[in-house]
Length: 318
Image (cartoon, rainbow, N blue to C red; front, top):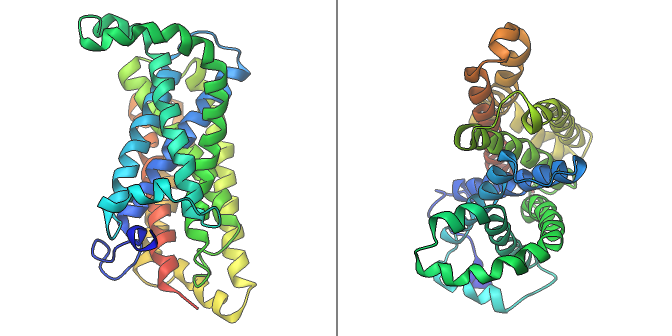
């Protein structure tokens, strides 16, 4: 089984875990983050209708995790043998535990999509063979509270798992840190919130400055601040560590990957949203241009963070 799940070096040109894994980490974070925020808002505000945000988040959570699995499996040395890990679990392996969580999480997101889009499904698929399955909707409606709770829990697990997956690489100080899972959960919330907001506005006509969207806009800044704090803690943990940890801290300032951090993570991910929303006046901050550009910048910033951690982290090994 082990050789079936070894990651390739072919995709990554000398870096064992390269860009396909970075994209997977982003998509898994978006999936979990979108679902966590939307379900939390649903319970906090005691919502009983299918809001544009819930529709967007449920759809985003399912689609992104499915595409994420494509990248994850595609970067295996023997992707056609991936099924082996589905029947041979090793609960001492972080990846095995993560795969089990994904095997539960993905069906939950699919069921949640079916529940949330029940009206659309009945309207548009009534004349198709799938109409024979409509008798399941009353059962799904009865199970909805349990499905939402389980989906919420496993969304957190999936977000954290993306950090635990690479933090077990003990040879790499930038990766082998307890801060990484927390950082990946928070950055997943950031990317998931941004991406689901964009989808809710563009496809489901959500008002970008009212209701759920206004609430999301309020909480995105504390989330960003927490993300910055965790990055600072990660850096400090390196510069106060061993001599090799201090050398690893140079990844933030030296080499090509430092440019990815400062331009992609800090400049685009943090800088663009802050400038658009606080430095250019209320007219710009409340414009559709600022809304979409800020959201896209947040997602790109999280992708840059994933790639920086992955590539720079593997550059320095003990």
